[in-house]
Figure 1 (cartoon, rainbow, N blue to C red):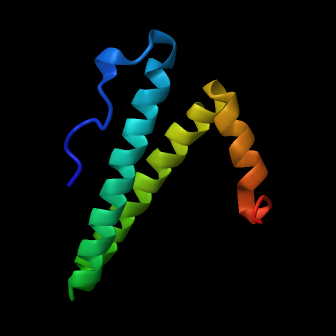
Figure 2: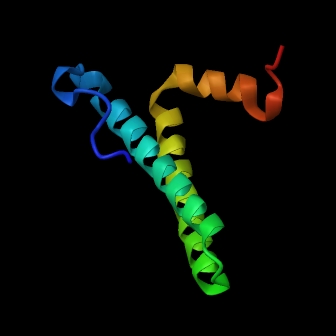
Length: 91
């Protein structure tokens, strides 16, 4: 399970620090989505499954929040996302 920031933030240029923090936060949120959805698939309790899937959805909202802000500050990321959204950039 994810428990450490995957990049040494002490060596990141100050101008890139917030972008790296957002990327690390997105990784943590996606890891949580995987965890909750995996646990939901294991349980036979419909109540617990519903709770876990609801929590997983909330984590997806958090990913979207970070991604929205990241696209505002990382113009290259915004360009890639716009070019490849909904498979438009597929070869």
